[in-house]
Length: 264
Image 1 (cartoon, rainbow, N blue to C red):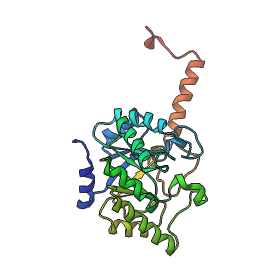
Image 2: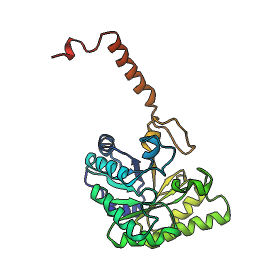
Image 3: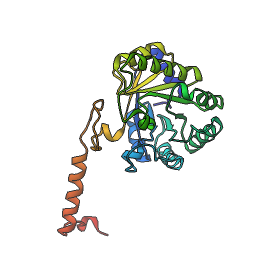
Image 4: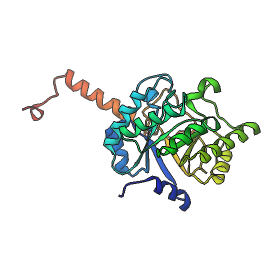
C-alpha cells in the first residue's frame, strides 16, 4: 500500500471516503496499526493518562511528545503521522509554537495538532506559514478542562453552537488542513462538516464527520479508568492479557517454566 499524504487526506473528503485515525505511542503498536491499514496515526497527548498515569493531559511535556513521536514514526511506514502539541508548547507565542512544532517534525511527525479555535488562529497561521501542516481541534478540548469544568459536551446551547462553528471556520481560515471535532452534538458536527472544505475527524461527535479517531487503549478495551459514552470497545483485551500473565506467573512459581524446550 502506498504512503498516505496530506493530499490523500484532502482527496478522501472530496471523494466521500471516511478517514480512519487511531492513536499510538510506540513503535510496536504503530507498526501493528499501520499494517492493519489505518490512514492516520495520532501520537496524542492522551499518553498522559493511558501511558504515563497522569490525571489529565496537562502534565505532558515536549520531551514526552518528542520521545513517543519518534518511537511511533519508526514503527509505521504508510500511515500519515500527526503529533499533538502539548500544553504550553504553543500558547506563549507564535514564535515558540513554530519552534516546538518543528521539534515534533524533527522527531518524525508529518503534521502537528493543537487545540483551540479563534483564540489560536494566529498561532495556526504562523505554523502553517512555516510549511508545517496543522490539524485543528475544537469542541471539547482536554487542555481546557479547568475552564470547562471537566470533560463536558460542548455546543449544547445556541450561543455555544455559534462559537464552535466560528472556531472551526477560524481554524480553516488560518490554514489548517483538517480539524478534530470532539465532544459535541452529532447534528452540530454534521453542520460543521458540511460547511468546511477541510476534513473533520470526529471523537464523540457523531457519524457525519469525514473520519473518526479513538484512543487505542479505549478501542482495545485496555483502559478502565473511565468509559466515555462515545467509545466503542472493539475488543476486550485486558482480561486475555491478565490471563496470560497469570499463567506465566503460575508456571514460574510451580517450576514448569522454563522447560527443557526453552533452555539452552
